[in-house]
Image (cartoon, rainbow, N blue to C red; front, side):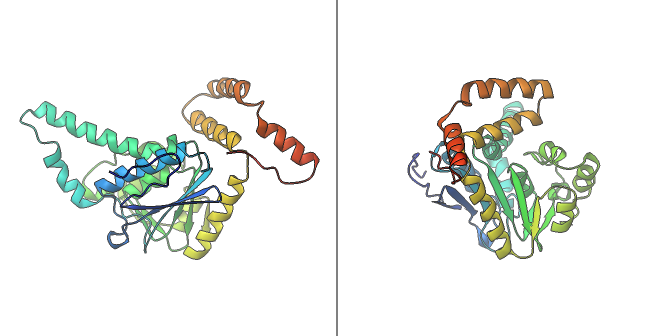
Amino acid sequence: MPQTSATTTPELTTLQITLENHIVRVRLNRPDKANAMSRQMWHDIGTAFDWIDAMPEARVAVLSGNGAHFCSGIDLAMLAGVADEVDDDCEGRKREKLRRVVLDLQDTLTSLERCRKPVLAAIHGACVGGGIDLACCGDMRYASAEASFSIKEIDMGMTADVGTLQRLPKLIGDGMVRELAYTGRKFTAEEAARIGFVNRVFESPAALEAGVMAVATDIAAKSPLSIRGTKEMIVYARDHSVADGLNYVATWNAAMLMSSDLQEAMMAGAQKQPPKFRD
């Protein structure tokens, strides 16, 4: 297992990770398999986003895929191996093991959501099955014009179980989620933007790269403490009442408002110059 620390960029076998100008680039790196999610990739994703969360210099992450596609979903070889992984003479224990496998996969993707830094998904080519699950965990999603999407699990005779059916209804309308999940049909980048799944569509993968990096650069220039608090509040508000959210943000700002970032922003504004925030 690769050794990582809060100051060393992880060296992972299925991901490429770079950190420059406070922006972490996380690239799925199985291009010969259309970035299908192997068991190792699942492990690496959790490792990567736990590291991003802990790394002070990392202020925002951009998630993309090497090769022709963003992600073709779970690796079928991994699915085939699950039966051996959970095998047990006791049927109850076998089912318990299988449940733990699913919960572990769910937690891996939740690492994007749990990460205090915003995660921007830059999607080109195919985004299928587990790729949809992965993209749903990002803060924002952007696509190139040729990108296509599909909740493919229904065509494999299974119920999507690592987040799409729980997170997508919070992003787009209930009826549209049901249509896409029940039929497994392919939908385009243009439709993804129209229903609110992606923020914006760019004309090409190159334009997508430039556009998403521009957004990431803008975010990286903001107060890191305030960005982390904003993400915390938005994720919390999704699953709680307005009253609960207001109470939480009052407590948060009672603790975090009087920061050096607030002073820096006010002084920079008065001097009409860009603020410089500590990590």
